[in-house]
Image (cartoon, rainbow, N blue to C red; front, side, top):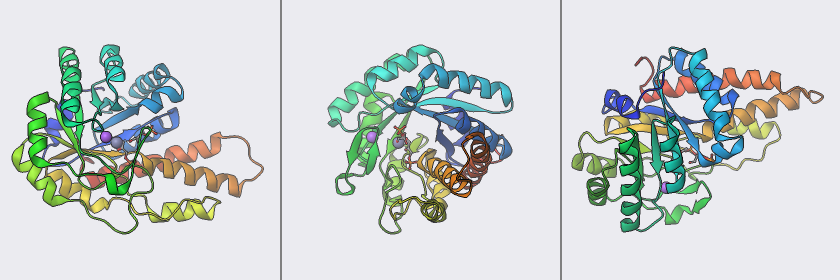
Length: 307
Ligand code: G3H
Ligand code: 13P
Ligand code: NA
Ligand code: ZN
């Protein structure tokens, strides 16, 4: 059942984080729903601009509506990931989305405020909530590349002012994470000091952590052993998800790790079955492996068992 993002946040705030997982196709949808049912977890389906273009936004909507029928126990919200203003309006008017993200974090503060305010007004008129972003993560976000050195953490005082000025419902903060598979050269920790300061200024307000994939080292090793050449890198420490949730991080975005599961399954399958050409056997393995991965993440986020 599709619920509002606000409902999910209300239940989770300060206790656990809701996993926000990106999907692009039917196999990801099947694995995601199965994993969340198996672990009895509410979840957020994220759709990026790229996902809307990969097949068609209508195809994705149909896949999600079908999954909702196949898995009637599922409790989830549908969210636009990293939207621009135009895409936000399209989703707001579609009648399908629960919430949108307006990402104007690369614009100057005043511009970010102005754009976010317009989207909030349009979204609230139709009952959707809005995630905005302040600060800059490292890595690749849609088509914008931010070098590690240029990433800047969210300023707590600015965050408080931004939320007051825009009326947004949740805020993506930069607290040391980064998008994609190439996050950090060595082990790195979240900036809990910054998170604590943000929380103390806006008690009860849901925060969002993007770029939260862990880039499992064994996954990368298996991909590379099966012909891949993914460079060495470390991701977010999964043992920091729950401590972040206790400090107000109510939504944790994980996309890259799921792509690594897909790549590992398919590389290994076709390496071991080099004359194979039916994509359904590896597709079936992927659905099972992705479901297991999702359930494992929901355990770490504390969302498992919350249904
Ligand atoms: O932060 C971006 C998400 O991982 C979505 O990636 O724009 O390649 O679909 P995408
Ligand atoms: P990862 O690239 O770490 O999975 O982050 C995904 C994300 O933030 C989607 O918005
Ligand atoms: Na951003
Ligand atoms: Zn993101």
